[in-house]
Structures are given as structure tokens and as C-alpha cells.
Length: 335
Image 1 (cartoon, rainbow, N blue to C red):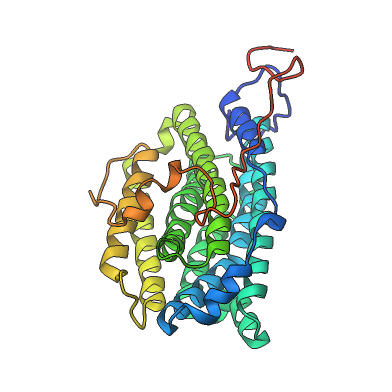
Image 2 (cartoon, rainbow, N blue to C red; image 1 turned 120 degrees about the vertical axis):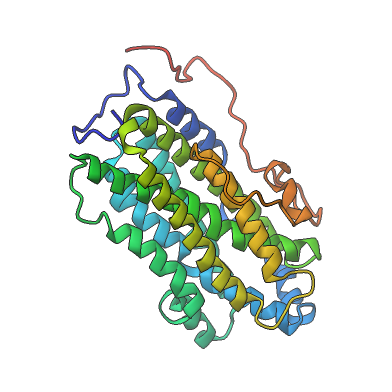
């Protein structure tokens, strides 16, 4: 079973083919930082962004600078440690690669967007020193620290603690914090600004969507195998967690929009976050709470758009095609 403390290393018979399929799908989505062109971004940062938009970008860079390292830290210490499925651990290996690629991407972003060394230092220390970014980091640490001492998921209480951590990172960190920041990027893209950042975000967005989907499928498998974990009390804690995440992200929004940015407002961002929160609740098998609509037209079709450079300099569909062959792994063989 998925949370059994007895380690399973056997891929035949394949017990969780849905995770192996996600692993194979994720392998098709491989890109490198060498494909990102920030050259036009330099000109925009110098000549086109007004001071209000420049502040927004600096705060985004400060969040991005360490965000994926936090996710990777939890992935290695908690997800990989306790998920007893070799198929899902294969996906987690690819996810860790993705997170390191995102870390490298945002390292380049800091280097390219913040030539001043003091500003770079501030960005990398933002999770400690910039209050709105620290709130997000502290939120992550709270749910990581809650299961740091769990060596074996040997009781209902311990399994519930792990499930809360899994839900936190899928629904709140990747599903709300990141999606909130992506919305700012796509707002700028909609104004024809920062094509390098937009291209990188397209690819990161695709990766994060797949990470969330895998975690949600894991939660569904856990729900099927351990229905006793999903009590009314757990649902109430999850709802409170998501509400807290929205409040934390709104503190970041208030900071990002300190000086005002035409076309954006805290009210619109709150509605968007509530819309995303409802999507996460449904994915978790729970009922919607906010019944919010997506207020941003530029986000409506984002997840189904082809990955084509918005500025049409070149097409960069990064899903790689691998033809079927006699060596392709099948799901229904025992050995």
C-alpha cells in the first residue's frame, strides 16, 4: 500500500501504472536553460518598465530565488521517504530534476535582472529578510517541520500528518503561491513585456501543473487505500490551511502592488487565488468553498496553450516526441 512502512522495490507486477505513465509523460517535457533568451528583457528592464512594474518584478525575483529549493527540500526529505511506490518514486526523481532546473532558471533570472550585487544578495536572503517572502517560506517550514521526525508512517495520526504535508505542497505552495506569481508574469507578457521571463514561465508552468497532478493522484490513491484518514477534522484542517495560504499570498500581493500597477489590484488577485483554491479543493475530492471566477482573461487558456514563444521569434514546443518501439514499457505485464 502507498503509505506502508515496508519498502517496496518491485516494479512487476506494476501496482500503480498511473504514476509510471506520469513519469513517462514528464520525460517528454525536458528543456534546458540554454533555450531561454533574456536579451530583450534587458532592454525592457532598462527602457519600458515603469518604477511600479520594476518593483513588482524585483519581488517576483526575490520569491523565485529560493522557492523551488524549498519544494525540492521537502520532496527529498518527506515525499521520497514515505511514498511506498517505486513508480511514484520514479516520477519524484524526474520532479527533483525539474526543481533543480527551475532553481538554475531563477539563478539566471537573478543574475540577469539584478546586476547590482547588493540587490542579488537581498533576493537570495528574501526568505529571511523580506517580510512578504518570509511569510511564504515560514508557511512551508511549518508543514515540513511537522513531519521531520516521522521515520515510519506506522499510525493513523502519522499518516494524516504526511497527507497534510503532501496536500500543503501540492495545493498551497505549487498550486497557489506559484500560480499567483505566474499570474503576474503573464500579466506582463500580456503587455508585451519580458519575453524571456514569459518563455521560462511557460515551461515551469507546464512542469508544476504535472507535479500537482501527480500529487493529487497520490492523494486519491491514499484516499482509496486509507479512507479512515480522510475525516471531517482533516478536511477542516485542509480548508484552514488553504485559507491561510491565501492570506499569506495576499500579503505578498500587497507588497508586490505597493505602488499600484495599472490593470492589477489586490481585489482581482484575491478572486484569482480563490478561483485556484476551488480548483485545488475539487482535485482533492472536496467541495468548492469560494465559487470565484477567473478574473484574468490572459490566464483562462494558459494551461492548454501550445508552448510557442509569445513574441513569435521562434517556436519552442518543448514536448519531445518519442515514437513507440518494441522496447516500450507496457503496463499489464507481471514479469
